[in-house]
Length: 300
Image (cartoon, rainbow, N blue to C red):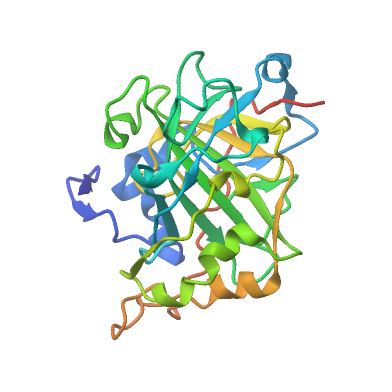
């Protein structure tokens, strides 16, 4: 699949990068990257607007235990795709609501999302830095973190599939979890133990360890977060994305962080892209202007 550039040029979606001219030319090939609602942004906690309605309408996560996952390296990030056909409802009570026994998929609802709409988890993606002083896409009070995890969902109440939902009103919601260095994370370990098997671009592996993605959410009550309207953070940078950035971070160990930093952004036996060392790191887009957008907070 490819996007048509403003000048009529066609560029494959995978032919982009986070370094030098590659990053600066996103807007030439993907016009959405020049939009007024681009992501990521800096979250200024002092100017965020408290929205009481967010506190009154809790965010509900009806995730389930998935017994099969696909882990892959696409040269830009590590992607984790759950296989819903192998899911069973054994999630903890902290993440259940009254409907969860009947909903056999990984869904999110409530909070800033449209009423009576459900969003299904499609995939998880990681962004990280070469050093601990950078790596996250969003910043909080201009502070960057070593890693950020994105959980992308699409609106199953309005659209027939993910592609149909992309760029559409109320189509996509991405939940963001900031990651800090600290104690080892058992949930992340399910994947870091297999990263050596996908060291090079184009590698993938099916994991059959049972896992509930709710383990990636640092606040079981899901009460405190910021939300705003933005975009995908990589080409084609479609807008109409509702972002939910959780206030509290997830922790992983330094050893787990280093497992990500050993990955390569090129295929085995192939040279790295021009001007790059070949390591898959610093895969984050710089923060974009907030412009007239309002960042809402579910807490005071």
